[in-house]
Image (cartoon, rainbow, N blue to C red; front, side, top):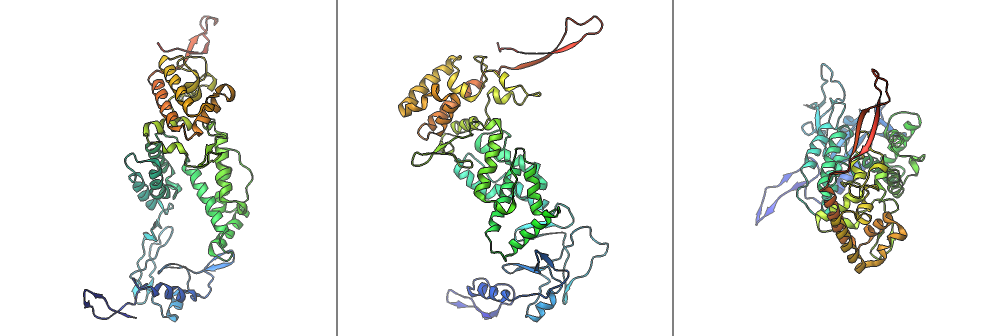
Length: 461
């Protein structure tokens, strides 16, 4: 086909375009698809076969991957020319001492150890073929979010710029988890705990992708690849399906027996996260917690952008997030980190020293500190003006009462402010620590002292 360029009353000389899809030509992509639709390579024993379907070539627009030994002969019969300049070859595994010579007559094709194809960089001489790609993407992800933007905007940036590289390659899992926790600390004010650890996020993505494959036509390459992988898993061989089953078996909470061809996205989102939440003592404020929708109805959502994340004051928002996700400064969480861990019933309140120092106790129950008591009195007055029914702690208990306050859109900003004020007071006082001391048993015989382990609390002066 012949073309010319017309610009500002000037016209170029007529020229021909013979390589690739013609840029700017609306008919060219359609004609290209029609031409490739009839492209059929002669079958060869060296061709890839998935579920009985031979796959000899793949195309991404005009980027073609040839996996057939008969590709060169077919191209010559269909008026196609393999361009050696725009092509490359790779040998996966140890390189031979003498590299073979590959030619697209008369040009020789270069062998590469690393190459980028459709935005994906992979290398052929390393077992971790995506290591370079993932390392580069992880570095970009780490520096992609700066400042203290509102959470919803940060979430969109995180899902677009950070989540894809973080969930891409498991060989750098420790590095990626560190980056994920650093970013979540910046966004939500949490510590090193991850909201959805990468290994769980990767599992959800894999299962959601399986749901996508099940919706594809039965004769598509993806469905053939899935069936082939499932057959390998049934035979006890490694593959994508076997990897999913292995990860499901290694989860840290009890799971039911799952069939790969019966999963749906909705079932995975609810079932997997519900098991994780219900099995953790740190997420008790999320168990059965409901949030009011736009019409005021209380509904339960496992994976959801909760309304408290819209609180405009970042300090108040982060304080309440720490309360909900057990990232706060109270003894019930801090003494969990001690080695050996202090039993929960012994993580006493630093002010009243009688009850376990939990968020509901510190915020709503304990009044042993005068500053805390004064803030509680004002909070009760403010909530009474908004919704007095939320103060029925004697009926529902303090834990459910705190859940109800968190679920209320009308009270959420005042509750977050209150949580920030109370936690600031607690954080300014030393925690009621548990001291472990070895003492000599007075009943031991002389010359053979017996040591016993004494545990006691010491109230701060």
